Amino acid sequence: MEATVRKEYPRPQFQRNDWLNLNGEWNFQFDHQNAGEKEEWYKKTDLNQKIIVPFTYETKASGIHEETFCPYVWYQKSVTVPREFTGQRVILHFQGADYVTKVWVNGMFAGEHKGGYTAFSFDITNYINDEERENNLVVKIEDSLSEHQPRGKQRWIDKNFGCWYVQTTGIWQTVWLEFLHKTHIRDVKMTPDLDADSVEFEYKLVDVARQQNVTLKTAITFDGKPVTEFSLNADREQARMKVNLASEIHEWKVMHWSPQHPHLYDVEFTLYNGDEELDRVQSYFGMRKVSIQNGNVLLNNVPIYQKLLLDQGYWDESHLTPPSEEAIILDIEKTLEMGFNGVRKHMKVEDQRFLYWADKKGLLVWSEMAAAYAFSDDAVQNFTEEWLEVVRQQYNHPSIITWTPFNESWGVKNILTNEKQQKFTEGIYHLTKAIDSMRPVIVNDGWEHTVSDIITLHDYVEYGDEFLNRYQDKEKVVGNEIAFNKSKHAMAQGYEYKGQPIIISEYGGIAFTSEEGWGYGDQVKSENEFLDRYASITKAIMSLDYVCGFCYTQTTDVQQEVNGLLTEDRKPKVDLARINEINRR
Image (cartoon, rainbow, N blue to C red; front, top):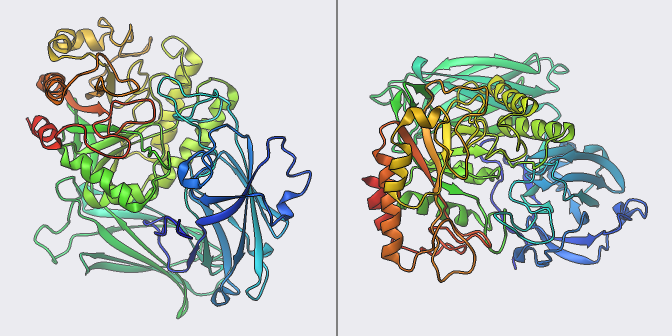
């Protein structure tokens, strides 16, 4: 196996040149009795196993492939800071580690983070040895089987069941070092205003007050051609600027982002102290608008019919971690090849490289949070803190057009009637809108909606005639007179339908009889039987004029769930061109 895997820059929408990839072989040790801190394992360099980061020990790709849950695991790696970065701030980044991460550098505690699905970092400058000497980097991950922490599709018993799979423990995305001047750019939030041909930048800067003459330059280009450039005095840690993009370099003045034309503007941020360059960041953004009008979702002020795939982002050899960038691209290209225009990323906060390629290739994305499965004060706090991090970290991606924090009453199982659980979902809705007023928010995807910008329904009825019989009267559906999916209803008690768009956001799930595992409904015996059933239900959904989109379950098989259009190793089960033909109708 290669010494380094997942070599690509892990954060392509905020990219610098000076970084060091720490993926590859690390030392590793299980700590079943939680003895490591007491015995000072954070000073060790001889943990008793090897692991390939960023793959968790449960996976084949890690080199360990042990599926038994262990609540405490340790990682160790010797790291040398290259001489050219002496005197710079040294930032240790984790793109994802589940669930509580503690870090020691040269035996000194550097910090901890809670949450399995968000990126985080530590400034480890004060713990690093000078002059190119080795540094002992030790990481402890603490996980649990608690239903009060956001888990997504990770099982909480010792075997797979239903649609819950082998747990993810430890580091599962890229680990890397970045080298920065003490005065640098922390973050830039980019908000397109399509109707005004403008984009707004909100900058967060670090340690600018100590400098005398700091300026921040923003240079925007399209297809290599300059669009506009401006500078501002960086005399405070937060600043904001809105700029018009209308330009004579092309006949349309402003280039919009859409699935058909995924135009992206490149932008470079450069921080100066006088003539001295302190920091330089490469990024990009897309000019697009998502809105709702007359029961339709509009993209760039035009109704868009969403044809989505439920995509859980699992691989046989690496589980939640994409095994390579090529694997990410393949999934997106197969989705588009089948005539879908987007994905609902289900119970997973996806790799930044996936979102980058979705931006580049024009794939619509619903970003969904991993669910907790109990309702308590701890669950509310754990979920809220992590979800708000997700929204902030993914905000700039034009491909994301919908936020989906809740699914099928998971973690709020009594939401139909329980006022506390209803208020929790309302709170998440409004907190999401406080950060992002642009995108629709779906509250409780599938059924029992409270406040929600879109009403989404999950129904695995097998054939079109039964579907049409159930859904022909819209008012009965949204008025809770029609039950579906074992007596579920569209709205929670105390909430009324207010003209929102309606999307069938789970259906299908067809499996073949030759496969071990399960799908939805009766299994089919042949490709023609599969396609007949797929056509029957899909055409029925598309025939309803009040439904403005669908999401088919699912892209690939996942462990015991064998209802993918592709196998877990991405082999098509049916002729993808025929799926495309049905979707085009």
